[in-house]
Length: 93
Image (cartoon, rainbow, N blue to C red):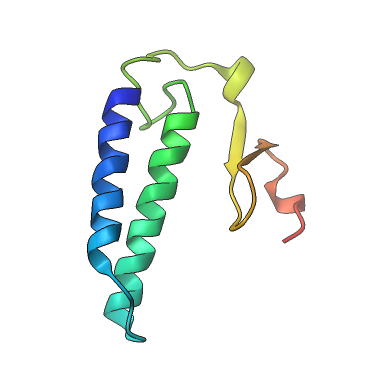
């Protein structure tokens, strides 16, 4: 639900804030990367207002192909955009 995802995002933000600056070692970089992926995943789950596969939303319990048969693409420094299913292989990097 949106409420559960907001709680998750708050927990992720708290974890990110506790990391502090990163030394150039694998463990620190991995921790920062894991927090980044968790934040992106929670945000994408919040945007996707439907249930699909293992992504279940109690506030949107039904699958909605008319609206959500799409990929969410998020690149650093850019807004989230949608790419129709089947087109990701054709996207420029």
